[in-house]
Length: 376
Image 1 (cartoon, rainbow, N blue to C red):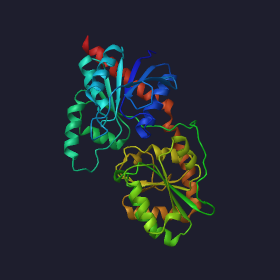
Image 2: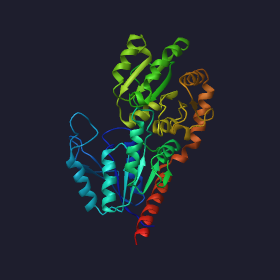
Image 3: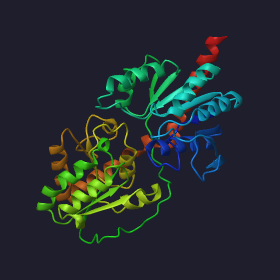
Image 4: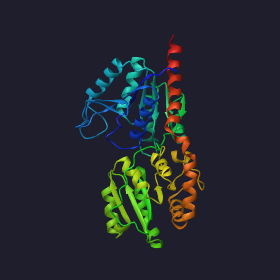
């Protein structure tokens, strides 16, 4: 079977920590172990080398600082360099990650101009925002240039269909059971406590503020709860202040940004995982919790609905009231926690990276074949 030369391109890559960063790197690493020649092209950071190799993947960083006053767009030289890398690189296929990545979208336009087959992996939902219509319009204009779209969940597939008539393939993200773990004890006493963990960027979109809102009534009934909030973002300081003013500091621990290895170590010590985000495109942190046998409570009608069957391997809530009572159910019923954890482990083979790699390379082959077959 032919092994192609592939470029995976996005702004969102290490040292930044997040779902796209992890899934793009693990896909690149797995493709590489399957014999593909893979390069990741991404943005540069101070002190990070321009060229490096990580897990058999060549990482190339384009030069360019963020434009003044924001972090998303780089100076024009970065996009020129990207064009030149694609022109000289002899890539047989380009896979851009994230419709909200300017480098990814720049690669989409450059590939179209250079005649390189190109796929976009959509990792996000437009969600409920005042800019909703504008974002769909932008998506439509950009996706005219793609040969196909990979959507990471049913919800993202549905969203993508509003933006393009090009082929859309649903391929889930995965979880790597062999990931390294760093086990750090919590710096607070967990003896006799039920530990409820949330892993998310501390932003309004992720709904982390709802955990802080729902905690007081739960703590009135159950004094032994410890809420561990893993992640960083613009809401973190505000939430810490609210918790302190409510006199609940002993029941909360905010970790700030920690490495993935530490996140997995914290999950191993958790009793319940809670994620109240209603616009979750997929939810890698949910898979990670399930892989560590932690029962999950999440919101319905998002990418999480592909992973969890409510009442079988976790709870899906349609409202915050339901979310709170699902948490209460798990707090009060240790046998239910154990049963959900057992069921969760059973379904994890669907999210094996070798399987995802095979599905993705099948899409690559079909797009390459289609491109050259139709052009000759």
